[in-house]
Image (tube, rainbow, N blue to C red):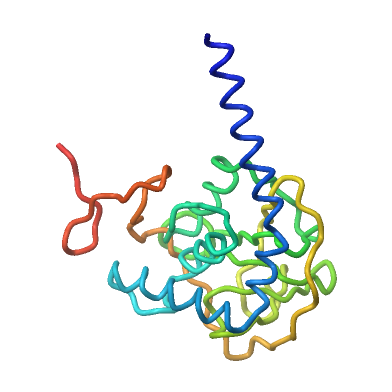
Length: 216
């Protein structure tokens, strides 16, 4: 019976991983379309408002969560950048990819540089690779459009530590219109934010001030 249970879990994990890879073309399409970007950012703004923040401040993980959900990758809406990266890598078995090997549909995970809470300072969606460093991305930093970002951090951004890729994902998608990032929002550590949902997607009990409720 134990062997049957283990096999069922393994099959469930494999099915979930395959389904994530299957919808990467849709994820790239959503992240490249200005109308879809605006919709996702509006959803993320509501998430941030519920915990006391005005969009786009500290909203990279919330924005990426909604991008993923709109594509059919059902991760819990997450406000902490490192928490979201861990949920993709540990819970959904996304692969860790070296910088320079990124492709459209990958999630960029930046180093922890800010002097506050440990964890990634920013996460974002790659929608086009220009070369091993320059990309076109979608996140919370440019409103209603894609923008450029260098994996190296060139231009005053936090360098990317690694990328995450859905298992069995291949390169998909048409080239989006390129936008510059001169007016983009800065990178911010979001790892001190309260999480509205548990790993299994169930709502986390919250106090009126937006902080997680302690259970005796």
